[in-house]
Length: 300
Image (cartoon, rainbow, N blue to C red; front, top):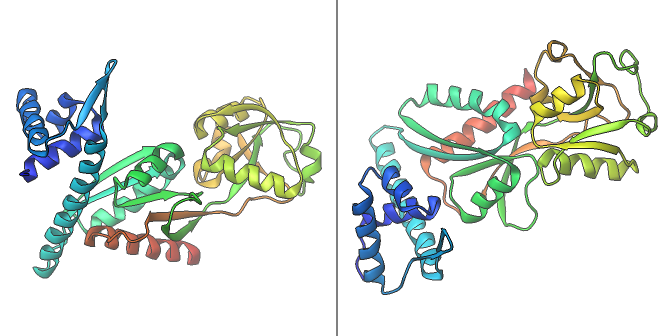
């Protein structure tokens, strides 16, 4: 059974995109060349690596096993290359990072300071909803993952690095604006606009409301923080949103954080990776960078 690194890289690209054309494009080869390499790889293994059902391609059991093995081999080789660079006093390589959508409000800033310190590092950043990040985490596709509500069914290394307070927000013209203290019970007759079920913000919000014995009247469930802020600014209801998404000048968006009893919800942003995973030098450097930035934020 023979396979080249080039074939394995091509197959990993195919496994990610489930498209021969997309894999060829990602590996900078022609589509006929990609098809031939994948066919030779399957012939060498002696089993089909993918199959077509309807108009879609799917990995076979052999393909899934090969993807896991090839990914582990490539990770080891990348770590070796970065280790050799470290011996020579160089820090370069590629950082693969997946983050939930709300993290896009602060992760680019952290990446900016990291890249300023290590200008030879390339970044591959995926910004997805929580389910999308969880899928990549389960498949071990990236070096690190950032979210506010880690799953409980996986063995993970978890590093809290930044607080993630959730505030109740209202339109600047709402009758409750200006109050110094608002009892949570006063919000019972009011409508709420919340993130979709399954999002980290919604999970934290539902857990908090349940602990307080409060059942919000949910008028809308929206899939983005921007949509919630626009709906709240239009006086369609109250929202619960991460302070990172709200930004530093909510008044410019016609929004106000309300001083509601039991709020803000206190949660954290976490950096995650699978337990037992050996971090590449680049990933370890970024993890250290996040922890340092988090400590600096606490004291600023």
